[in-house]
Image 1 (cartoon, rainbow, N blue to C red):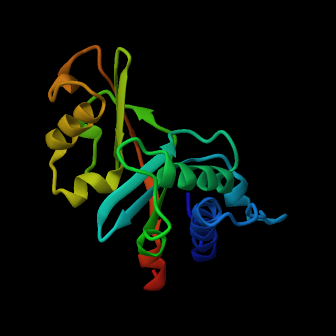
Image 2 (spheres, rainbow, N blue to C red):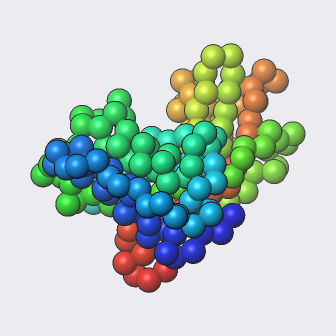
Length: 188
């Protein structure tokens, strides 16, 4: 999937407006009548918020259930106010947040960990009633190799580090189109 620069800007503006609406008691965001076709398609999406490059919230949807623009709107609000790892975003923090959006491909079950490409793939690990997801950029940020990435995804799922080796563990990969306000301000 390819998103144009304009489509990325629209999604980032929707994400920021969603958060502002909640913080500042603004009128509900008014969606356009005629978004480009890519923004109407159903894709999984995650919205990540950082302050000074430190995680401040990240929530999303693995699969697309509504249009991409609607899912960005919902995920941004949840990342700001419902990520259980953080207190809700304050009005004072609003101008400090950096918004990053990851639009996901449909996850694909793998037969071998050799299929995992660091920097290209994100991971979803499931075993019994546990599941965890890490986005592709996480492994790059921490300079993890494939096994580190698998270990950390297991831990995110509430599993033991090496549970990815179990035959009962399901491993899926996905790719993502990743863009942020910082990238867009630099013209990328």
